View: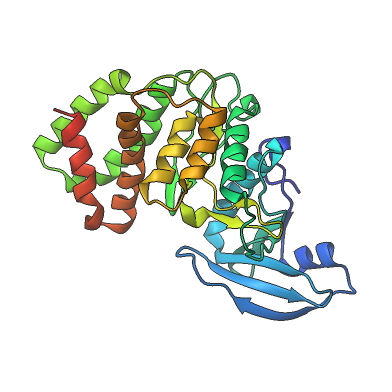
Length: 306
């Protein structure tokens, strides 16, 4: 059974973890050990050691999270379909005895190749230049389905214009969730920021498939020493939005940026646009994690909502 609304993003749904393992492994391969994997804050994760010497990666959560795993899988498939940058190979998702699961290739972290950062920058730029019209229907921006940004819901309703999409389906949904944090003065400043959005943001010359949550915790180093992207929140948008996210929490080298900009030109005014794009992520963090993120959110609102 295919779990996706788009044939290009088809992933097998299984009615049990045992069925998924049997189809992938066959009867001659056994699970020797199941080891917890630490690092995520949303799901339980495990490394399955197999008798043939290979490993698989298993994510599990409550049964209601089956859709969460489907959307993650769709994002990985969309990125993988570009052929520009690696993602883990997917086996399937489903539910088993009240637990949702996602099963995929285990990426064993390896030393970075000497040209890791240069290669990463070039590959991300190539992904941003790849065709992505299949994911937005007859419009330019959005995605075939809503998905998740961390643990928060992410609206992807397609729109013709990027600035409209970012206002209606990025900033406004997060503002509605966070409204209780703001006094009347801050809400008025936010309204002014939204009114000015067309003076700050620009329409891209070409829509790009975005990872959507590209911080340093969402890439790994594969067996070949090259980058592997994980945990996407994909949609089609302005490539600057991905680059802005890489700068929010750090962890990306100067070589990465220089290599990216060898392929895709850096447009003047990016510094201001970066703050608006990252306002979305800061608002999401405010809604997910609370008061700690209020101050940086207010700083951006006051700066651009004067």
